[in-house]
Length: 195
Image (cartoon, rainbow, N blue to C red; front, side, top):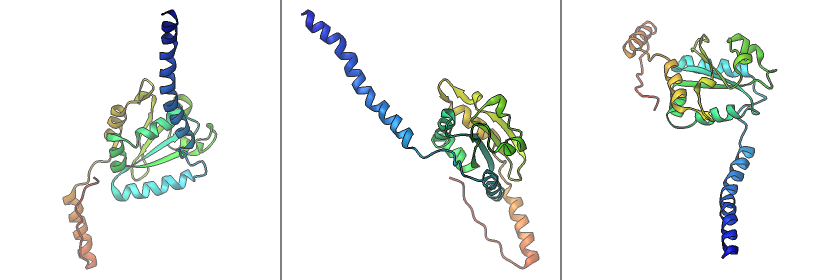
């Protein structure tokens, strides 16, 4: 009887450890093998310029995400940007540019240009730009966290509050018709939605 109770007292934690350890090991291996979030060789200025051109054309905002591949919170935020309501908002309303800041020694001219205070707030840090390159908002992501992760609702609320104002379709059509009349062209109307 005594031997049996001793055996039971240590086998349950061991069984639990054996069941949990593989999933923890798999997650750690997936993180190791995951594609880096930040392209360390990217030309961030060119990436922003290209994103601004697309955003202006599509009536979107550009969101600049400063960080580095060494930053666990940066990787967590990248995952949040790809899932659920946040993922939809990002996909339909924003052009995302990830700017690698090295170890706070890279792309600092971009950080300064847009007024991102990384020294005070750390990374990840967000800058929202209009299609013409004006800063709409600078946001530390600490305010968007809840416990050990980013709060999807807080992140989505921030993104929704900074998205571009929808264009007036009637004004757009009237402008296109007036321009087409001057040039003797026709207007093609394409109806759709980002989703």
